[in-house]
Image (cartoon, rainbow, N blue to C red; front, side, top):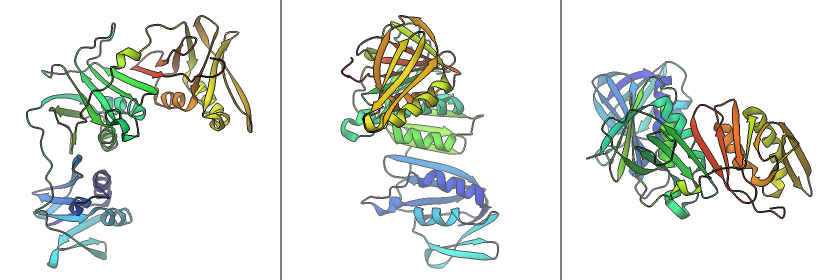
Length: 378
């Protein structure tokens, strides 16, 4: 194996696959990155047996071949190489010489024979979606996944394909995530070809890595292929495959509020900054922050005995009852506001312990539901 490539292209490829590599495993071989050269192409692969990824890198190939190189050592070295052309050559005793300018270093390699090859999804159905749309949908839902493995199905994102059962919803592709305290749902209308109707739960980590790798490929399509057990994403020179999560995802339609007694329209940036300031005080009291409407304005108030209190008064447009008082974990509110792309945001609230709903005033089909916190006032 022998090739040359630009350092920036090599580092981009190594960084993309290195995050997939298993750091702790009873199978040491999957702690490596597979380098394969073929004609005028270089392909880097990693596989942790749950998620696998292949990334193509521009290269001038002198000799075809394949080797395994230790992921962490290689990543650390490549990140520190000077800009310019880097050469790789397999020499004697399984060592790879990496040259850059007048300098070089060698790194021990392993034969690729026992490295688990990335499977292809068999018997699956496919559809495509613009990478820019998919990365936006992932960004607006993935943060609401559960981090604990206690209920594994909640550590993934539900992907629904086909007609929605919600009245007025024209989307045919939906991503939904929940951790039991909040729920994020993003819909889009895309060309599904002959995909039909389907639903599956994709591990959050797989979508997170996919989003990182394809971000910026706004002119390309992502081809998604799903079978009952696996899902793959193919976008340009990137191929990612993941196992699906088995289990029944909660029926999110049951928690979407049917109506609200009060709708509050605010400037997104203004309420985000106010919420972040309120969070400084609220952090000492389990992040509890009260939303209250009075005199045509929305108030964000928080109090921590040993710290102090805050009362953020926000100019807003109020529709419906001008009297509502409900408490939330302000951090969960901030998470939603950070992923909104609209200039204005709508809070839909009802008195008592009804869930709150946050959505953009216009634009993207995004809704965010957050459960209130029971306090003495409520």
